[in-house]
Image 1 (cartoon, rainbow, N blue to C red):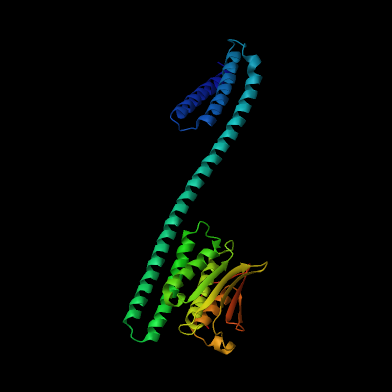
Image 2: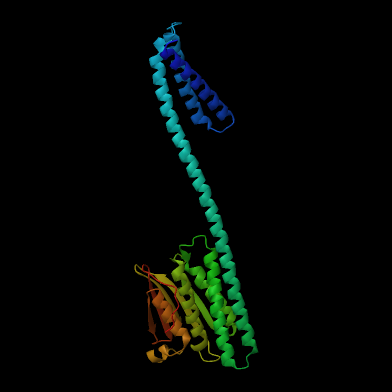
Length: 317
């Protein structure tokens, strides 16, 4: 037995073992069926070439010699197809693994967001309840009223927070739903005042805001509407309050107009308490500006730029 025959014999057994191992792995699903078939085909063509060489060099027969070139071409073709299909399967498996990881991360973040929302909402309700209890225990009407105003602010924050949480799109929130929620809350709180003062709405329902501006806008309306209900009209006087929300090319515009007595001058507006100071602070946060017209009643107009950086850090001057 010459060396070539011996080498072919060894190669023959190696091919046979590899082919049997591959078939066993495919049957046990250790190897994917698609790439495994092409790998088995490549091994089979290599096995065929090995058998042909063994028969030729051992002098038994050269009948398979004419097919060796074709078998080698098939071997290369099956090998390339195997490498391509295997790489595709590996990439697909990686994508599926990444997708599962993304789904798990999203599920974890959703649970975390839900937990944070419930904790924030519960804490706001606790604070609101404490303020309500303190208000009922105070005989001083001015202190009780201050606590009630603070409670309204907390409730407005809670309602806006709930609307943002319930929104299908956390990037852009419908401004109408937030402002309407604030109005309804104040109509319940000041139902005596609202029985003689009508609150009208003219709001563009297509306007959306990101959460960083939606929250300040809701709080701004809370302060402006509270001021109008409490201070614009004398006791027993009837009147109207109109809330507008509109937009142009550059600004989102919120205006609160009342038919009341108006403000005497800008000094009175600046010194009128925490309400207007809070409004001015919130407007600064959204890079907006305030315009006040007291020629007929009071018209406060808030202009918020559609673009621009903003912050939710509270700072009352």
